[in-house]
Length: 331
Image (tube, rainbow, N blue to C red):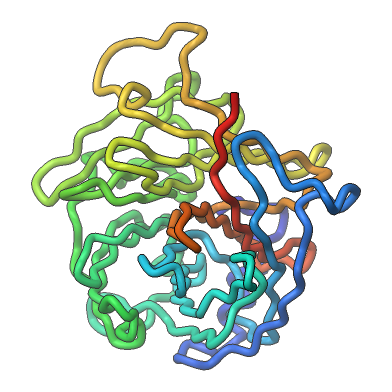
């Protein structure tokens, strides 16, 4: 979660005032968006081809802050978690050409703590999400650093009642800065990949752990300086898609999307100046872009799609964007 000036204080006030820590059907306002506002017909960027996108708003005061997503294996449903400690489920709407055009049947529910109570305050900052199979999902939290496992069912009907169990975490997690915990998760066979947003040691590669129930092995990956690692998605048996974010008041939002192969995730060794993951695309401020944090890959109309969602930080000057892309081959 990237907190801009005053946002942290406003976030606390918003969620305390909203009084909406109960499950509810959501009314959504959907606006289609193009990728390049100044060139609406342009669809390709690097190794991605735009497959439709929407801006999402809601009168519900608890809506927003979406930091991680998953898409069901059939490509029909969206699951999201928020910085405020909420689940969101909805149906994805595509047109006859398979372009993303909307969401339907949206439902919001507070995430529960281990005593069955809605998480609140510093306990509610959910950041990473990864499926573990059989309707079980790992969720990472910042501020009160931890990873929990929720059994919400393969149809996600358990979001209102699921009480979590703890999952293994890396040693020293409690020593990370408050807003610098595990930002991104992705499934990893018998466990999860877990990443913090910025290098633990300034000037060094990013740390990405492969965590199982019994172990947590630190890997290093060389990413672009000045960009935070905010999202991971599993793209294959030995590949991850990494989402990197940059923001400044003078420049705005920039997003880099890279493919991490097995050779990019190292338990030991050093990198040469030319080494680094494959850059798939880079989003610039003149595009339809915001604070992209969540990523998921699913099959739509027989082809893999990358879905991205932005975290609006509960800030009226930002947007919740849900964007869809085909993965294309480039020379």
